[in-house]
Length: 159
Image (cartoon, rainbow, N blue to C red; front, side, top):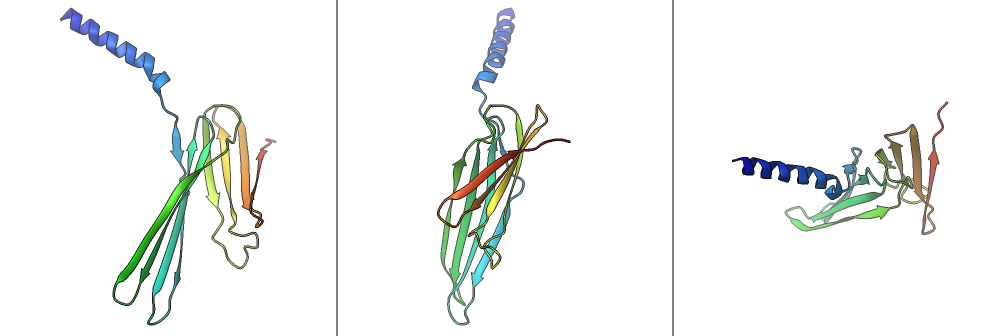
């Protein structure tokens, strides 16, 4: 019986020693998801509804993040659904802070294109905070309308 207890203690100690080394990156999902839908209606013809939603997945240790988007397009006539198409995926974005740490974040995105959106599809902002120091960085990314996005980050000052 003593050998069994010693073996259990040894196993427990070895697992706790390996746990920090085997720990995966910590990821946090944005709590600021949005969905936008549009539809084309024509009496007696096909109707199409398209919806898009996005979210951000943030690595709270490295400050790297992914922008994820999903879309669904539904085409129907007056009697039945004719076609349903889905698309989506996540795109890796650069680190917000240069060093590893313990970070928190939030993200938001502009509304879909409209008559006031002269820079294309708009943009998004990411706010990240170092949870071990008084350090906050705000980043804004917008579409230039010329093929590449423009992204700038700024460290906040405290007064």
